[in-house]
Image (cartoon, rainbow, N blue to C red; front, top):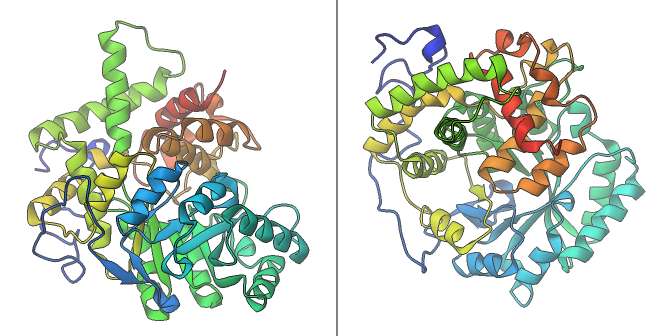
Length: 434
């Protein structure tokens, strides 16, 4: 399989090496498989203890959703963990969806960003606003939203405010979410470094983190430490597959329409297309053409980790409920393991890892690569175009339009040998209103 695949063609960073190697840990994945449950009446098939909270959460949970009826249907299907945040602007939707239900049967997590006002009073005010929007007497877990540094993680005003909310019976647990380091001028702080510090800190009961079969190395250690300290782990960004298929389809569409390559694509996209061509040959050779099969396998893979309590999925229509809920309680089969392994070694090398940010420190323009890639993920994979564009436009700093004529410093420093400049150019085209 390796013949003809040189450093530029996906082999350099493969942690697998040979199919059947160390890619899948046998103690975490079952050797048997269960059929995926299909149909409108798909039900949650497994519940897991959320660390020291003791709450039994559905292994598939609700992430962003802006549709009350969809959320109600998901809850009827057995989903009992809801992830939201003040910045999602959907807490009123959550409040409507849980109205009339036994509050103790649902676990609600919200998040507060660490903004300029870091006072205890400021956090208490915002916490109470979340309570009002959710129309509930208490929140099960309030998280530090996207802790990008250890300093943010330990913000005194946040913790003193949460202590007060616990005393008043308005809060049960504290948590933290992390996408990785987003600060290009600060010393590099990897996701694992921040979350391992959160484990040592002792004040965090639940984590929301990025983890998937391609960037397994960035989260496996954290999850193992959470198991030791009985911290609940919920996951996001578990499906790294969509990027290749979305961009590949766009390239084919441009060719089919006979359009000239937009200036944004230039050299960065030329490099990307070369890599995409190699990935496409890899996909055809090993029959990896079904993105649904790969994405379903990706969810089964993370569910196979004994330290994972729940996978947070965005559900914006009834098809999403059926797709994700049908995977609850299922296990990764041997054929699926092989497919994921092959994908990881081939087109998976086009995936820009959430929480990596290694290339940001070398960028002369200070482009916030991690932020931009994350927003483009919302645009492509979550179908949240308006939200993604709004977040991109609100970035403090220079946008990825500068990447077009750059010499590609990010690519030269990328450990995973990705066409970062091309990916950033495409993200700019998606997210820019210009």
